[in-house]
Length: 634
Image (cartoon, rainbow, N blue to C red; front, side, top):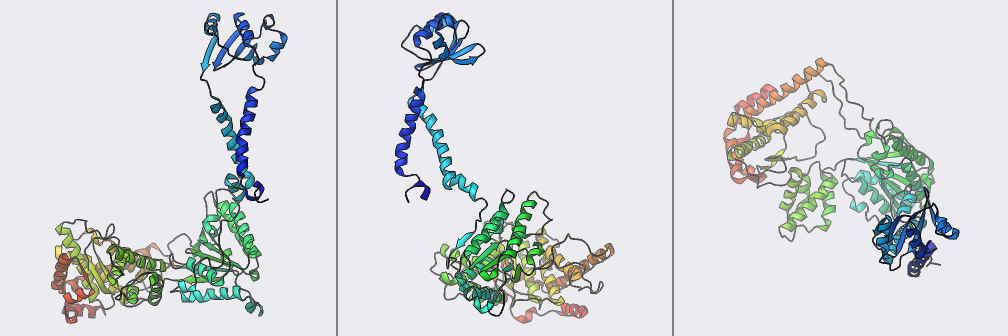
């Protein structure tokens, strides 16, 4: 019957109506069993005979011990037998007290040690028995019906995968933009799940596993959910960290249970997010959890070998650290197909912005193409954050629509941090920051291969930024020439050189600029072979693998003499860049002063205001000293 505890795991209401009175009845019977072991008159006779050792008075009850020697002179053998043995020639007794004012004087006269205990009510006594009984009954109920503690104990080895039925992922390929090549690869999986006979008739086999690799926020999880949403099949989603517990063997048990559930509901998709949590190379983990990690990975390898993809079970996995995965996972027959997702290009960023802007009320002046151009290097999650921040900023201002300046402010907030207008700088520091940023902007505008200046500001942002110069590339670049890298070196040093020219001293504000300039110069020498002295030699490995070899401990592949030569070349590149920038800013000192003073007044300048300030393009042409410098460099 449906109402029985065996069916639904619940106790019917009438159980709880009958159980407490029944327990109370049993409690009363237990308390009354045997009554007293000694009548009160017999107790008084034993007391007067000097045989009582100790007495405890608790309400109407009197308990204690008597000496066993010569009790036969006072009590009958039957009365003695009813007394309990207390050891060491003593017996225990229990009697019910009657109204006897002379009891205490007689106890004192006989020299008996006696004590009184607080009288307990029947309710307190009942609760002292009832509550433990109810607690143990709840434990029994939980373990017997599979809930609470029992359920945790019995289900610890079961998979914790979240199962989404058809269409419940809420994501389709229409929600995925900017990664068209990856979408096309995964559309083949969708077609197989919908029409498997089309591929099986020619003897083809769908890949058992598909590994999606990409930087954080590029849409790996979103793409996997879109596959399930398009195919209309059950979708098992689980993170790699959810397999491993503190108990050895739990991870392997959960792997087995996950694949068993998937085969029972085939066709379906298994998705393991953050695969590197359980799939990293075996033997490198020296912590105490290496055994559990190894068992979990071994079980995953066995299950991937055992299941048949022709049944319609496809394994998807995602990671942003493919270089640490075990090679056994990546071989054909397990993860047959590897899909790498890069950060979106200009067109892809515009498409992603269009997807996230569907639910946002945009003003007529919003240009998504322009926003995409201002967000180079942003991943899909970053762009979603830009749209959300812009909507929040517009709502804060009480607007009915999101305008273009809201997007600009959102981008600056994400890149540079929150504006801190309340940070008070003394006039000398503020002037130093103004000349520093003016130096960056002028050098960037003077170099033909540098990105154009989009905005200059001396408003502090974030934790350490006292000002910034934002440059906007005109297009996505995948290769950089030596001349372009040299121009970027000049832009990095523009702020430091401006401080030298104007104040004859330098500040700590150029620390990050110097770090970036040093890194770029070292890459030019040690990785790109752009040093004429050292030749076409790559001394350092570019460590940006997608599915390459595993990371090995870093080591120098060159001698100490070569290391010294690299340091000399890096210093030479930075010194030459410093000289070029000093010549440029010395020839444009009037523009440098004008720009810095304007920044001190307005605090920020956009591109239009910057161009208006600089005047005609003729003013930006190199002077005679700069032309001579360029001819020498050539």
